[in-house]
Length: 369
Ligand SMILES: *Cc1c(COP(=O)(O)O)cnc(C)c1O
Image (cartoon, rainbow, N blue to C red; front, side, top):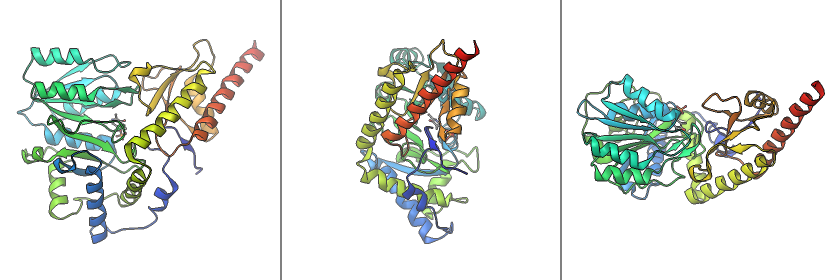
């Protein structure tokens, strides 16, 4: 298999040092594994302003596994949840709540804009029974950034706890973890921290983990996972040993490179370059500038042009460049991620190729007619 350049929001290009860190086999119930796991847990909470108030609970699987663990472990029959959804990942939260028989109400908003704060405020005023809010921070579906800090303020006013899917934003886009309303954040190894896929994690406010309820699932039981890490330092079931080794190195590199601030600045440089270059061929971002973040960007192909996003993806793939389809199977839209080990040159190679494909397809059309 050939190495390709991934412009996708995870899995993404990992640094070669992360890949080489995975070249050893570690036993699951060994002191090395315990130390590695505890190190990762400590370093994850150290990314927060108030590390002492949170605990990191890694969970095997992709991001959705950790989300399902968070939702099913935190929410019981005594709770009522308001789900705020403005895209595909928001809808996924509703699917999880449905499966776990959680008492919820879901508000669906325009996927091209952030969650409207005043509408949420009105809902909380008219129906004060909600105990929790559940939402996505950066909606990777279309690439829309929600104002989490405004929502945390609302939650404080209405005495609600917030459960946050910060999969594609943590720890690069700021979240006010000082807010007492923030109960838990979920993110994954293979997003902004540039690790390999294999596990995700929940950063939970410690005092919340104490109100345990009967587990609804064996493997996704967050409380049991937490107890195991605290009491034995071990994973309950087979840990993703290689992913943990790679991720540990990725965390180290994140710190060495200047942390969240530096990484966000780098993503911004890449996103600006990408947008400028594609505008030259009349490929435009779908989401307004004020609502975007330099994580993933949805683009629209020129409406009158023959090229479809499917053909574009196929041709780019043949050139070892991997982009992402649009969430709303729109034949003229596609997404490009700027997270992962990417340089300005990677962006320029991509935009050059896209321009070339656009011109070739156009030429064919002219020749055909
Ligand atoms: C990546 C992502 C997820 C998790 O997706 P998986 O395929 O399970 O890793 C969830 N929410 C958001 C916003 C994401 O970007």
